[in-house]
Image (cartoon, protein in one colour):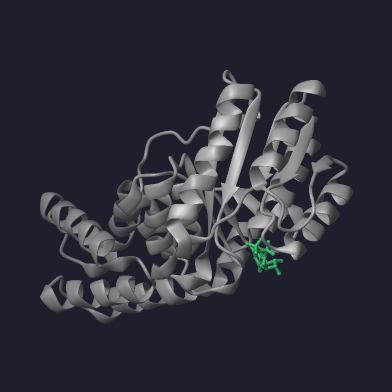
Amino acid sequence: SKLVKGLAKTRNSIANGIDAIFSGFSNIDEDFYEELEETLIMADLGIKTTDAILENLRAKVKEQKIKEPAQCRELLINSMIEQMAVGETAYEFENRKSIVLIMGVNGVGKTTTVGKLAGQLKAQGKKVIVAAADTFRAAAIEQLTEWANRANVEIIAHKEGSDPAAVIFDAVTAFKARNADVLICDTAGRLHNKKNLMEELRKINRIIDRECPDVYRETLVVLDGTTGQNALAQAKEFNEVANLTGIVITKLDGTAKGGIAIAIQSELNIPVKYIGIGEHIEDLQKFNASDFVNALFQ
Ligand code: GDP
């Protein structure tokens, strides 16, 4: 499948290493667990998540009186999936009037994600509007305009450097006037100035609260999967300034660090809702822990 193909690099780093351990050891001993630990950490699962997974594995091995390393493969896969359990992931914005705020620092794939999501929702027959509220970067406005034209959805944009809150005000006004289903806002993500970012978000949320008090709101942060543990640190910082309802991890097709998706969902307890495995519209895929881990161990 496309997912299996997209995750090829991470699969090489995780599954091949792990399978070599399963076939290389004849006993389940401390060395065996140490090698597993090293491999998982190398694949960017992080120490905390790796330790939790291995603790779970040890308990399963003991309980089921497993003696052969090879028999641990399925148990390890299950431990990874269990470690990511955050309950059923809801995509409420697909089923009700919604305003989706998308945040993320420059270059992570934020604008592309807004474009892909707009295109997918439009293809589902929804009336979609996008707002170019990341007014900091001129290219972001142009890029989003291109995506909007391609997807044939309306875009609300002002010129570079204008007040993001003014764009949001125009966007929610259009959202109401056109009786649209979903408004997707490309918002800023200047983490180096947290105070400004918080102030900007507060302004944006205040406008939406006032103009559209009953509309469901989704706040997603976009993270670049190729940055591994850095992406996890970014997610934590964004979560401090915004009430995140979900995470998008992009560029998983270009990295061996895809284990970061497991670490992020496990450590933050915020659902990863989408992953990006390429540059086309259909390359933004809904994330499912079980499908993801199984694709890594194909
Ligand atoms: P922004 O600055 O966060 O808005 O980032 P952009 O949306 O401009 O994306 C930066 C680059 O990453 C662009 O060249 C995108 O095509 C690329 N990109 C975004 N998502 C993905 C993905 O899932 N896979 C790959 N391979 N490239 C991606």
